[in-house]
Length: 533
Image (cartoon, rainbow, N blue to C red):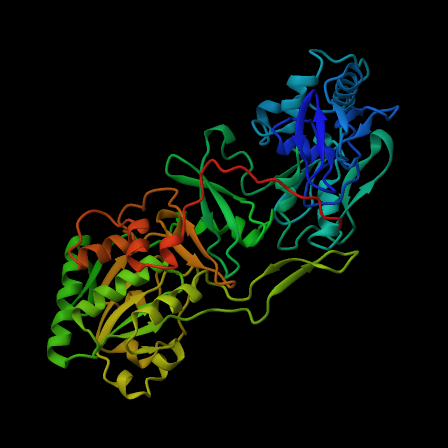
């Protein structure tokens, strides 16, 4: 492992690591714009130039590999002069619009201008203004803010593979643009917003909605497919405003899909179920939530007493957390020890959507075809519980003897879209049904007891992705009025005191759930190794 000296401090570096990343890993801040560990290195912004003993001129630290015994100066007069000159050049045509720019508060240009910039511009000529433009379904480009770091261009070539963005013009007329007839509409498009170090590329969904310094965040996991992309849920005053990628080298690295990024809209959907209901004389009528839970338990107990063991079922949704599935199984089996466990429908698009580097043709990202986050986790919990089980197809066919005996049960939805067939299966039409869901559906409208549920962003738990990796997620906001977390309902059914607590349930479930930890809310991205693309 090579050792280098930076501004008089000796630090350990990694083989083939660049000076810039070695400094950042050691807590030594070096300004940089074009460099990103997930992309190729053009060394174009030039603000990271440093002085290296034995080399007669300044060198780009992002592109200079470390060698044992190297002596680097980041604060020498020559290095500081370069930083100030680069900043002055970048601000020549940059508009003074920080008060209205969505990037304010997390802008590299803003930060470095404060540290390395001049108090006033020496430019006497009028600024060259460039128009803003839509470059895709989700992304808007403010070209007058662009510093030509080219991160976005490299992303579309090296990660998403569509090469929709390119550099047009030269000199002060140089700007980012899209090829005619080729808008930036791939399902990874909004990652260019995360990559942009200034306010040039912005997500239309977040535009002018919130100042970033008001936002708080919690670690979470994508709810839209089996990939298990790691994310940050960012919120303020009980409302989620955006989702950002959370680095995980084994799952999604630095990127997330646009479907994941905009999945929070379901949390604030105006059509959400927010009133507990019970069926009375063929019509659903409002009822207090606690009353609805009590009548649900009483109804199932009565049904079991009349029809015997093996007459109840629990349909476990692949949208549920593993802890919730575990508790529901306990609750339903406390009423009917031979209750059948059914895995709810697992929607799929048929094939994964795969992205490739346009040059190397290597796979860079994969969006899973399975459009639920926890089918594997629910299967695991059902296996742990034992007893009679069935798939959704087996359940709807109802041909097996243990399925023909079913008279009613507990159904969990929680899907982000319509999840049932247009024609309800026969088993759904008869017997006593308790339904927990977040959106209206044919089954919720026919439920004997309807219990509005919390969404994934309003509760804690664990999901198991397609790699069989268990990942914990944390609630960002409290459940909407009139809804409850499934875990709280199951606690009440089991006469447990207190509120649902996912870590406690994981300990009770044992290995491997007991080993799952909650990611730190203050976690920083780990050290990176440069990988040649």
